[in-house]
Image (cartoon, rainbow over all chains, first blue to last red; front, side, top):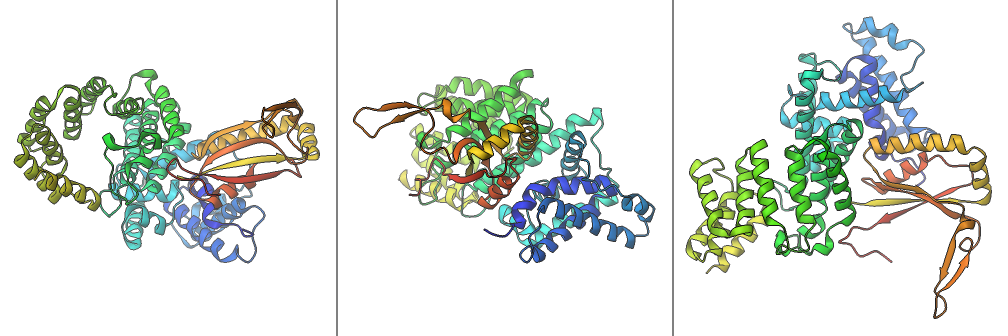
Length: 404
Length: 121
C-alpha cells in the first residue's frame, strides 16, 4: 500500500471540504462540483505523485476549481475578489465554525424542498463522502439514477436559493427531524432491504450509523439524535444472527443470540441513556424496545409486557399502522394470539396497510398458533405474493407449505 | 462491519520524545480524537501507563509465573490504542497516518472480525 488511497482520504475529508467551500463561495452546487473535480484529478495524479498532505491537496485543488468556475460565471463575479484574497479557508480552522458548517451541510442535504430520493443521495454523497458508484450499490439503483438524483437535488437547491446556514430556532426541531428521517431511511435500506435477494446489507446500515454518530457529536443536546443512534446500534447488533449461512432470514425467536454484537449493544445502551434524559421520543422508544430484546437471553425470557407498554407509548407519540402491527405481535407474546388477532383484524378493516405483506404475515402466524391452519395458509400465501424481498418470500412459502 | 485496532508501538526514544512535549501531544491528541468522533468512526481510545509499572503473567510453566516490569524487549512497546469503525482497511490506514505520534513510533493496524466470523489464522 505505497500509494495514497483517494477514496479513503475522500471519505475522511469530503464533508469538511464541501462545507468549507460552500461557506467560502456561498454556492453549494459550485462547491460540490469543485470538490468532485478535485477528486477526479486526485485519481489521475496521486498514483504518479502522492501528496505529502492529501487532505490539504484536495482542499487547495477544490478551491482552485471553485475559483475557476466563478471566473467563468458572470453572476458570481462580484465574489471573485473575496475568493482570491490571501485567506485560504483551511489556513486557520476554527473548530466551532467547522462544526457549524458540517451541520449546515447536513441540513442542506436533507432540506425539505428536496425529494426524499435526492435527500438520501445528496447526504451519502456530500456528508458521507461516497461516490455515485458506491451510492448506486448501496441503494440497488443504477449509477445514472444516482447521478440524476444528485443533479436534480442540486438544481432544486439553487433554484430555491436555499441559504447555507443553520435553521432558525422555531424551525430547528422540524429540520433536525428531517435529517433524522433521512438517516433512518438509509439505515432501514440496510437493515431490511426492500428489494433484491439479500435481507441485510450491513454496509448501507453502517453509513447511517456513522452519520448518526456525527450528528450526535454535533448536536449533543438533541435527545432524538441519540435515540436514533441507539436504535441503529441495537438493531445492527443483531445483524450477525439475522441471516443463516445461505442468506435466508432467521426470525428473532430462532436467532443464536450469542452472535449478537455485544459491543454494539453496549454502544446502543450508552446512546439510549443519553436519549432518555428528557423523556423518549419515537426513536428513543423504538430503541428502548430493541434494548428490551437485547436484555433477554431468549424469546421466552423477554419482558413482552414491557414491550407492549412501549409500543402503546410509541403509538401515542407516533401513530402508525406498523406500530399497531408490532404491538399485536408483542401482545401475542405477552397474553396470547386471540387478543393480538383482534388488533390485526382492526388493521385489516381500516385498510391502512393494504398491499403490504406485513399484515397477512402476522395474521397467518397468529391463525397458525390458533390452529386455524387453512386460513393461516391462505394468509401466508397472500403475504408471499405481496413480499418483494426474495429471501423473505421463500420463508413465507415454506411456512405456508408446512401448514399442509 | 469491519473494525480496526490501531495499536501504538513506541520505542524508548519515541516515548522519551513524546514525554518531552507531552502537553502539546495531549492537546493534539484530544483534537484528533474529537475529529474522529465527529467523523463517526471512533469506538474507543486509551493510552497506557509506563510499561515498567506493568506486570506479566507467564503461563509457560504449570502454574502461572508473575513478574514485574515490561513484556519482553523494551523496543516497540504497546503504548495505547484506537478502535475504529471504518468502511475499509485503506480508511483505517489513512486515519493511522493522522495519529499524532513522536518520530520513531509505529502503528500496527489489525482487523477485528465480526461476532459471526472465525478469526483468520
